[in-house]
Length: 145
Image 1 (cartoon, rainbow, N blue to C red):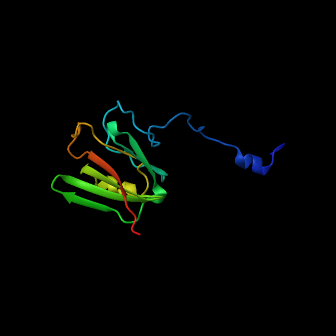
Image 2: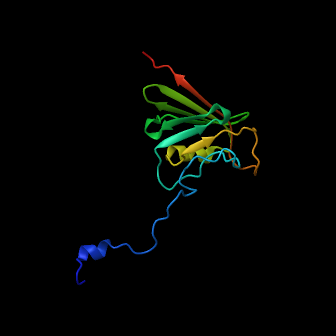
Image 3: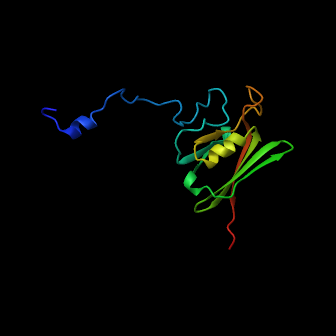
């Protein structure tokens, strides 16, 4: 330890250097021209934003900190429906309709899903058990006075 302190030796980095560039699992928005994926894979850590990719209708984004504690997951005759509310300066209700959405519902409440994506085709190009989002509806809910 000549010429260096114990603290200097302790703080020296050993092992691989952190990778530079985007990691495909870091929650970046998907390529619109890429293959359909209903939602991001759950990340290992909580994220701040929740993006709703609505195809030709654009993207609507919310902050997870504004996610209300009362949400719903229901099964109907045409599939499953997730209903979320975000309470900020206005109350926004987000309704996500599709198939095989139970894992998505869980991931949203763990704040590890950065985005969901509506299918422009209305059907999944992959296996039957894959999630499929057929609709994302976003509307303002009037506050009671």
